[in-house]
Length: 155
Figure 1 (tube, rainbow, N blue to C red):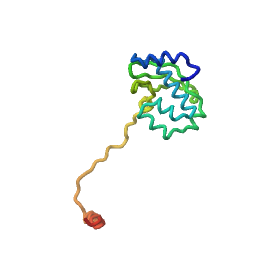
Figure 2 (spheres, rainbow, N blue to C red):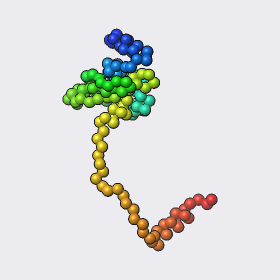
Figure 3 (cartoon, rainbow, N blue to C red):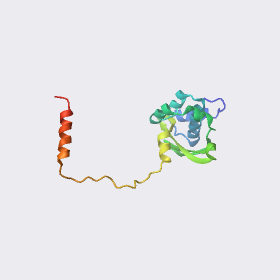
Figure 4 (cartoon, rainbow, N blue to C red):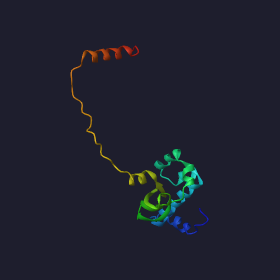
């Protein structure tokens, strides 16, 4: 528990006793994750991420994260098992964005996979899909097939 957050104790107690978590608890979970990132505490980060998101820690650019200013938590919205934490990024001129925080195994954790999904832009392919037309095999095709058969190890 962070020493500067005595208010977190009642919030966490509420999450542990089966009550629905609040947006303030989701914002606190994200803030704790961010602090663990800046401390380069991989074990703490793993505890604050969904199981699926924790795999991203293997490729985390720890030094670059540490050199950046922390994201500013503006608030959170949602309820039940899914929250959206609003942030401002001082490293990008205050650009606003959101992170997803979910309840997994009874605790609030950051879902990096769902968060990335919020910001993905789907582009349509400009080329037509490949189309295949049937044609007769040529003598060269038969030669390649025979060469391939001869290159296989004996059975």
